View 1 (cartoon, one colour):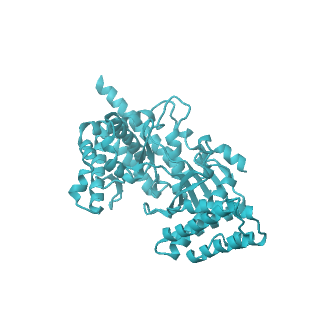
View 2: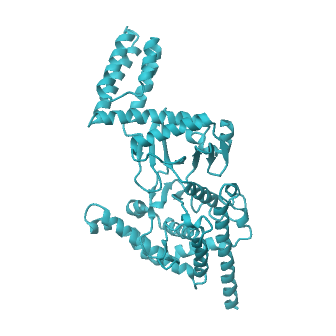
View 3: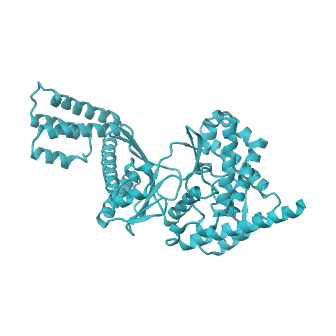
Amino acid sequence: MSASLETLVPTVYHHDPIFGSTEKLCRTIVHLRRLEKLSHSFSSRSMHPSQSMEKVQLLWEKELSRLKNPEATPSFAEIFKNLTAALKRNLVFSPYEDELNELAMTPDLEKLKNYIQAFVENLRSIQAPPLTKSYLGTKGPTFLVRYFFEGHLRTFVIKWCEDNELACNHLYHELSLYPEQRETSFCRHVFFVPQTLELDFKAKLCTTSKSQSLPLPPETSAMLFDQFYQMTLDLSPGSTDPGQKIMLSEMINGSNLFDFAKTEYVEMPEQDRKKLFNRLGRLAFLDLVAGNLDRLIEIVLTKEGFYQIESIESNPGNVLILKNSSGYSLFAIDNGIDPVLTAPTKEAEKYLVFLETILTLEQFEKWLSENFIASLNQAILNRLEDEKGDVNELKKQFTAFLNDLKAPFAREEFEHGVLNLAKHLLNKHFEPSGLFLNLEEKHPELVALVRSRISLVQKQLLKLRGQHDTSDK
């Protein structure tokens, strides 16, 4: 089981336990749970948990030094008494109590020394909470993991998810890579989707980003569910029924588009700024085709029962930008397609009409760019209203980005991005029926609907191309 799972995960992720074998995953989650319990115990006991933690660490390190001193002759009983006394004074409970009792039953100074070393490393790992609740997004309890283990920083995201969100994330992941070995690049290198591992505790399945699934042994599934559930109750007591599915995701240490515009955009070279707006144009058009109504362009269903684009606040938090050695990478997160567009509903039919209408507009890309600029500008202004401090002073931090947002080059690059994606949709190597094959068995309706929207857009784009060719003559 574990060896097979590891072969499904790209080699670049094998160093990380959550993307390795099932055994590695289990060890990681059990260790995280121990750290979280230890951290929670300190914070529950004291208004100043760091001080309590420091007291325990200093005393345990002192006893460790005694054990390492060849000239010292400490007794097991004396050291054990000092260690447990420090814990009792500073902890509500100890997640290590059973292990300490086991050590006491078979006194061995060498085992005690190794245990103290491991415990001190754990204390160092929780100088900052190893598990924190994220208040961004509302679709399910989400937690951010960050701790050191054996000299390596471990970071990832834990999120309880509904089936629709998981399926849509797989869909976007495939689109970001499609087609890996064909002539057209489609969205490759335009945007990335964080690597994920999906755990379905009800079906007892483990699924990679590429929609490849393997069975999860019942005892392993039950153990992992219990670990995740207990951690959730500790940090989010109201989440008594978070569901039966979890998505583990790599943590992208970049900035969302709002924060990037505020702090890092001013340092961005001109060529990279152009690439950014071009990529945003491609992603926005892809969202439009797929049915993601809440990212760069806001699409609403009116009271009258039809879809329309509105220049209201967009959601720049669903785009992350990471600076790296080769420039800047754009990540698409929270890739949910509107639920009513994932099944054959009346709304799904109306959305097809909406897409067809947009693509009959003369220079539709210009209309999309106007709405993108207006919506993103409004999102920034609304966020500023929520920030503490003088709004005008805060707005100055966005000067470079807001000025470029109004500049001709930003509009032109966004429009080029829209048209670039449209061009790839018409490439002879791009065939909708070849998409989402691994996803089709579990989510046939979603796959069929997205394929139908892509096919409709292709048909309309071909009509536009024919009209332009006729007018050119």
